[in-house]
Image 1 (cartoon, rainbow, N blue to C red):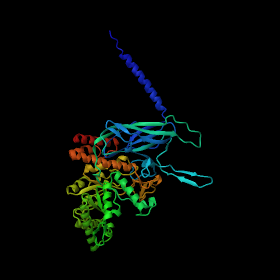
Image 2 (image 1 turned 30 degrees about the vertical axis):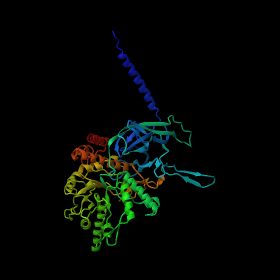
Image 3 (image 1 turned 135 degrees about the vertical axis):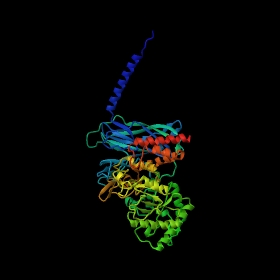
Image 4 (image 1 turned 90 degrees about the vertical axis):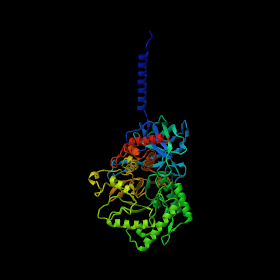
Length: 603
């Protein structure tokens, strides 16, 4: 009779498993440092309990950015991180180069007073992203030091206050590393795998006993990236306006309109376009208005403007308001002569755009928040001159498509693009405006809820739409394009990415009538403390970019399957304006579902 050894083998296997598990547990208890992986939609506090996955798994289309974070957690002792790097990734299709990865150290910013209607408490939050490599020099940022070259010689300062490496992590604390991945258009679709490695050193302890040496000098996590076989367009589909570049002269100590100023301005324009936002046109590239209102085209400027539009993938062309007092400052009076000049100016400008193929998405940002009946009258007056000069030219007014008061003038004939605040959105009014042939954008500012004249005020008065502050969940910066798609809204506007705040690095709060809005109007940090003569991005800016890229998925799928099919997926993230998800997994799952459907329909 044949013996059955299965029970013995099974008992042996269980015993071995228990021993191995015990060993692993003991090893885990002795871990000095641990790496975990969190998504681009998560933050981890300095003193939070360490959380996250044990490997990187991301997915992206071609011509898309995707991000993740590797968190360094000091478990048993203080540590110093002296390097972090990623290997080339390999797969059946070949090599995905490590040159496609950019590393940053997120800096913790103190929020001392909460924003109005803040969802998160005061404390330290990661926001500005200090690059490992200075993009202007191609070298690491040197830490600030002070030395005497000889005694009693002067103290010589070198390096900069904000730098990426090395950085210290104290026992029980965390420091994330932000990683941007760009997938070039010519990348072969498929799966690629590699390794992210952090190099450690003993924590310096010059005033006390010598620090214990750490056993493990390097620690790694595996990295896997799946490249989907479709490509996002270069130009942004979702229309947008994110304000002008301001305060360069005072932040960098340069003269306005000097060569240094213009160079820095271009760096700011570059960071806009790298995050799929339309950069503002530098004024010195635009045509001039002659004394009679006609447009003066300067060949050198025209060539530079054409290059700017091509280099920065500009999709929307904002025509500057006529440089006449009543247009640049709508509260000033307009005479008949000025109005004739304005008509000629807009007529010539539109012809100029049409000749160059820039007219399709051109508009005039005519008026900002007309909040009185007199302002409504001025909207009608200014719009009459624009449309008289160029009937095809779209006029944008930052106003909702329902009136403050029925007794005020009707401005429907004047407005082609309505732009209500997030909190002022009303689905019926938006749908009615679109059915009339108008376009609708949305915008956010501060922490405004629905006004009393909202058509359904009693229903929505206590609802909050996403607010764009540091002390808000990062999903607040990701969901707006999903919300816009749900309502048929084609664009998004924000008043500034570079406004004046109390202290750009240490207290980035915009103070309005004594109320703080942390990071309000401020998504880009000046690179001065890092030795960078230009801008520094932020985690919130990265998530705005991801939101704009999400819209490209929505647009691609709509072309293949129609709007109703897209809405089924959009509703998983934004079923209506007031019920958007704050769960990152919901957004990633919906995005992956879109990718799966696009791939099915393009094979």
